[in-house]
Image (cartoon, helix red, strand yellow):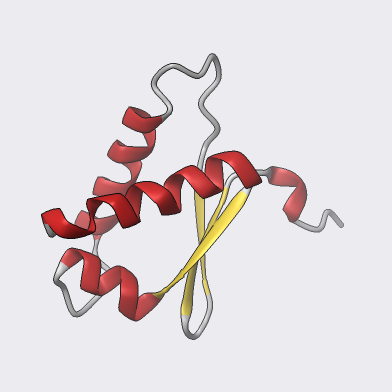
Length: 84
């Protein structure tokens, strides 16, 4: 993670925490991390930051990522999924 983008990543996570989801373009996310592919390292860092940011919450929601052609979408609320 490049230091200058830490605020962007934290904002991405906080938006998901407050609104139930957040999205960011793949190229922007990769730019924040200075990488050319979405890796396990990026996912691990996002999960660690998630736990750190929401440390004072009573219940920390589990996060899920959905990938589209151009976006990475972070989902927190389970009711966004259609139940069959």
